[in-house]
Length: 301
Image (cartoon, rainbow, N blue to C red):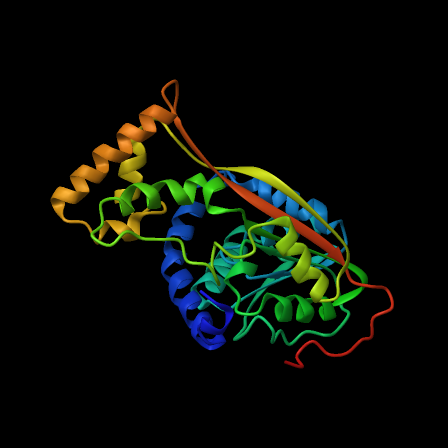
């Protein structure tokens, strides 16, 4: 999709609220199940590049269900704090519930209308993070510029996105298999979404355009899911607990049966000697707010 064909910004935000609002219940269930998410290697890398340290005041944008906000709260300790912001009401309420349940006093969460309207004091945060959300925003450069102005001079920002589709097997495998059984195969669409900002160069460009300096990037393989068998993987998809569940609604009983056989056969080829392990590639980038920036407000847009 060409740039001029992108939907209007408010339409994109509406779509994101709908999408992530529906997902909030699943995140609550995941939290209730306990244990650290398998993709915490990504959060750990993000926090390391952001230089999160005790006593800092941190802004976590598109906080979702609280990853990495709660990890940040633990790292900055009682002398520090984290403010998580999100445009999705259900996600913000999920975070507030968790903070109350776990007695996390140094994390607060704010519902915002737009990622460029924060209602925070300029130059008041030591670091800003955004985990796996920048690619869903209608204007990543404008968002980063707004967040940069919330940073103190010399403060750090760290953002992460998913890599190319062919290296995101957790997302791509079910789409590849199931689209073969749809009457109209599903293709990958560029633009806003997981297929945007998939390279170190792309993240470097948007951070630089937003005024950050000393931009550095890293690429890592992120474990997303491990199940004991191909059949167990299919059961998760049918239960709506993984990518591809949305495509199943478009399959007849016969096509769904054929898709199941196709998927299980392919997974047995890929994982003949053990459990099914699906990974994604992630790209993480960090930049520094120049020390000589002004202190203009952060809600100018």
